[in-house]
Image (cartoon, rainbow, N blue to C red):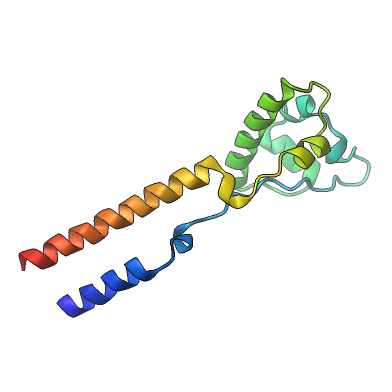
Length: 132
């Protein structure tokens, strides 16, 4: 039993940190269906007033729970950038606000939290092994 726990412990420690990370991708600007204005030409002040249901109607795709959460945070970031440039369009926003997957503060925070949880589990296993 101890041998198996040591192997599991070594495997957890030897794995790269990136294996515990995840991506939070910025939303791609989808093409609007025929007859609608392209989403990239919509002004940010109009976009932040959209609900997830209205966005699903514009794009023709239904949003899952993660897309809705991402859409909410995207609108908050856009609202902040709207103070600097009131005439900002969606295309201008995405051309100036490229966020790589590792730069998201939410992703970094959750990665650190997950790594701390794994560390606590490993320490707990070590304590249990040392007591026996």
